[in-house]
Image (tube, rainbow, N blue to C red):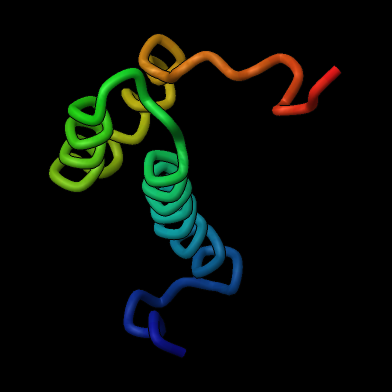
Length: 82
C-alpha cells in the first residue's frame, strides 16, 4: 500500500485518507459553487476564487460562511410565468 512506511493499521490509513479527502472535496465544491453562482458584482466572483485558490481550506470555510451576503437574490418563481 502507498502508506505502508507509516506502519499504520487499516484504520489508520482510512483516517489519513479522510483527513486528506474531506478538505479536498470541500475546496472542489467551493470552486464549482463559485463558478456557477451569480454574485451581485463580477468582482466578488474573482475575490472568492482568489481566496479559495490562495488559501484553500480557510478560504473555503470563509466563502461558505459569508457567500449569502454577496449572491444575487433568486427569483421566487424560478423563471416561471404565472
